[in-house]
Amino acid sequence: MTRIRFIEPPRHRLARAKDTLRLLLGYGLAALVVWVLLTWGSARANDAFYQPESGELAGRPGSVIRSEAMPFSPQGATASRILYRSVGLHGEGIAVSGVLIVPADGDNTSRPIVAWAHPTSGVATACAPSLSRGVYRQIQGLEQLLQQGFAVVATDYPGLGGPGVHPYLIGDSEGRAVLDSVRAARDLLGERVPTRFAVWGHSQGGQAALYAGLLASTYAPELKLVGVAAAAPATDLSTLMRDDFASSGGKGLTALTLWSWSRVFDIKLDTIVDANAMPTVDTLAGGCIETIFDLLERRLEERPLVKDFLTVTDISAAEPWNALLRQNTPGFLPKQIPIFIAQGLADGIVRPDVTISYVRRLCGNGSSVDFVTLPEVGHGFIARDTAKDAAKWISGRFANTATPNTCARLPQAAEGD
Image 1 (cartoon, one colour):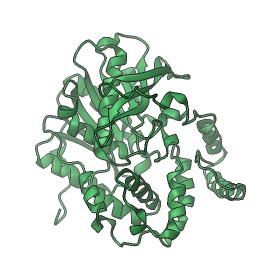
Image 2 (tube, rainbow, N blue to C red; image 1 turned 60 degrees about the vertical axis):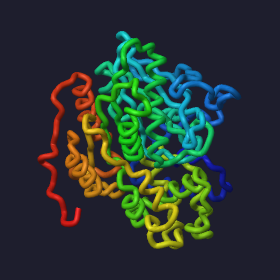
Image 3 (cartoon, rainbow, N blue to C red; image 1 turned 180 degrees about the vertical axis):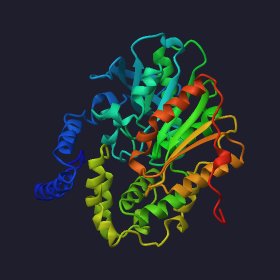
């Protein structure tokens, strides 16, 4: 019972529905009701709003192609679906969609902006969060951010909603989309002063937030970045890919990465993926992740990958994948940018020691890092469970208060780290 949007034979849909229903029943009738409410009546990916016409891509990055009011805005706020210009991986003009949410009261001409970067939702065009009725619930800490008077802009990333293939876990693509979403928000708000903004993201969005920090000063120098917040960010992609391939539920993320990168970089998958696994890879690439129940469904979808999937033992050692993994592993942010990082210690997707190692390197490079860990929280809920902390930290950055720095209290480095 998910929002998977590929078409399959009715007998397969019936079997899939039965399997998923058994999973859902373990969570109770209330969970089933929540799923129905979250997935009922979403917008369609082929909506003309998302399809730029000939000539509409010409213009500066971040300029708005169009916007439209969204129904059911959060209480005390207005929300708009937006389509704005950005830059593709080859320097070409592209269209990227997203959502802008603004408190209904106050002066917008000097309002601080928080850019939300979402976690993995899929690689299919239909997987754009702006197409989901549950988009406001997916933006962690939205209520707190709006209460503090911040405008919140949430990019879909290229290829989700808008045309083209989604460059999944490609840092430059994500970072530019985030920065251009802030530019688009700035234009729509009619900002008359230099725009101050913060970035907050989870998982894939954590990687996007870090890349926005890496690119901000050169790609969008007219914007003033006050801080970067990330929950369980994808940092060391080589380790992440090895861990995901070995973990329950992780093979699906590896499949999404390979499917996306093969199309973005024109690489043949048959050199690394077993031919018998390709139908499963294509199936996973056609589905979307919007709720916890979608994660349960994908466990069913990726079962065929357990037997035969890759034809190599270590993807991080295979060309050209190893070079791409290195290229999309974020490095040090400029020292003047404060950083908030949250990590669940029960995370089976992004291992805590990988995040701790990245934080330790940031600290060693002179960054000011506020590092928060929760002992019994896994990957899916770390952004939700630290959203209030992140919102408070972001508020402090806009208020120019003293920046928390927990570098001195980091766990001791393991031998060889």
